[in-house]
Length: 158
Image 1 (cartoon, rainbow, N blue to C red):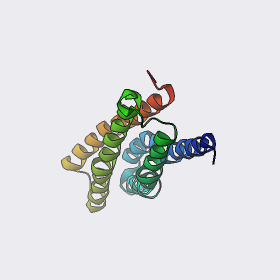
Image 2 (image 1 turned 120 degrees about the vertical axis):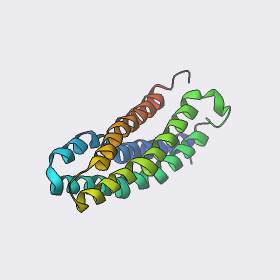
Image 3 (image 1 turned 90 degrees about the vertical axis):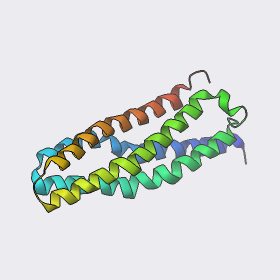
Image 4 (image 1 turned 90 degrees about the horizontal axis):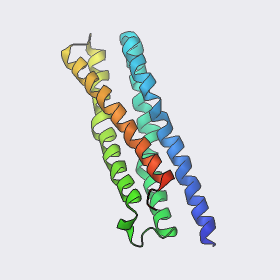
């Protein structure tokens, strides 16, 4: 099979994965504040929706489609040769790993904790502290994703 066809195929998969997998995360900047204004029941429903989107859509794509299609592209396009000279690529990979694990191991569990706390009663100081933490982490995750996109598109020095 022609390598240019395979490169095109895996690039299409990779770009579609980025759109389908990470596009919804940009909506969190709207959904999060809406959850805060929606009152206890509405806020819980919005936060539960955010977690469902994370678990059912973003996580499978971020954990499987993106790394596997990216790895295929690295080898098909020859970026594995002198890998560390393609600094835009390995920096993007490092940002991806940091962003992925921050979202999966920190942000989503914080939102789940907020859901349980909101279901238990009115928000207290701990709930508000967690909410402030998610308000800081959310934009940082978004900046990480945008940085990856910029590096992948511009390929500075590449």
